Image (cartoon, rainbow, N blue to C red):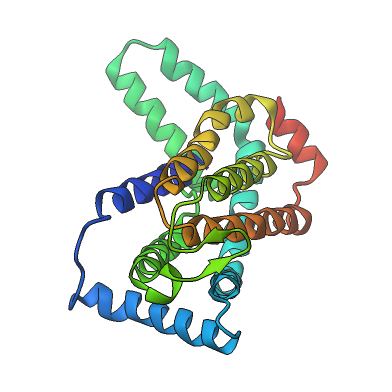
Length: 253
């Protein structure tokens, strides 16, 4: 989750720094921005000019396409956590020796021993499952510029707000939804790990809120719908791939 939050914050900072960038004629614009502009126009027109619903439909389509990747990643993470829990006694003993010894050669030997323990049990502690987010990143950037360049969105309203103008209420809603999503993602995680992850878990909703304050309201609408879908997806993943109680107990010790 730390790495995912870091990448997401990096994405937001990238978007913030690129607000005035021109992408006309570029490969990115032709193959990502234009298709989303076309989808927004066609779906919005099909729905009688309701471009807010069009954004919701596109958001759900994106999330449904990513769903198999996300669930597979969640399964791999749960499997990895189970393996880490099983080797935790040996791993902790080696890590304790590494901290206590001052001899560089001995530290190197213990590090190799730790790596062998990982390899023997098929553990890769660096495997955080960022593929779905990496897939989503160019999609989000493409949709962002499509929203900014869409004349239909700039001139249409949805519910109480104008899709092409910033809306502080939508910014708050988007931030709250992602705050709830970060809390749901911490369910069934040992208290010790929760304490380490809470701060990183706060970065995404805070950055979403700050960025949404000056972004077209269509973007926090996208985040709100996507965040709500992520909450449901997380609950499904935790139900399907819930750790065995014995492993949870051992992991928390």
